[in-house]
Length: 194
Image (cartoon, rainbow, N blue to C red; front, side, top):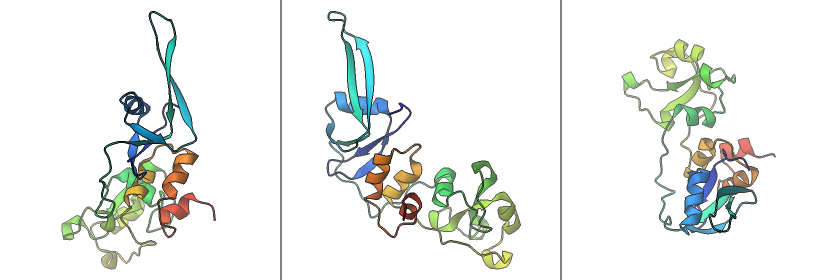
């Protein structure tokens, strides 16, 4: 496992709570905060040599670790932070007006109901748009612009948001996360075969 990979952190009940760096995972192991492991990928971290014995210290970090002290996490009343990166991932880097896929630098956040007309900067009022479509729509509503949405925006669940935020998700981590996502989830459908 590459050291740039993220470690999936679970609470004691086995529910995903976030991503941590391998450095944070080492601290969790050293402070006896890891209660059990679930993944099948691991990373061997080598430390310094013992002055007396000359032996090098090592620690093996699992790709999925459950930790103490994180049992009370709300999965119901959770609204994840809206960022362009996660919005573009939610919409699969596709303009929801013309349906074409674009690179991240060619995308923008569009407010379905413009902010100047009382719209909110929220998951349900924002979609991914290419710059051409966003400029065409401008400060108008859908009705005023004559444009239609190709998909309905949605608020990702806590676990869907972890998938959207993950940089490079290992197969065992993705399988674990998807096992906690409803079969009707658009994100689940995007990341599974069949």
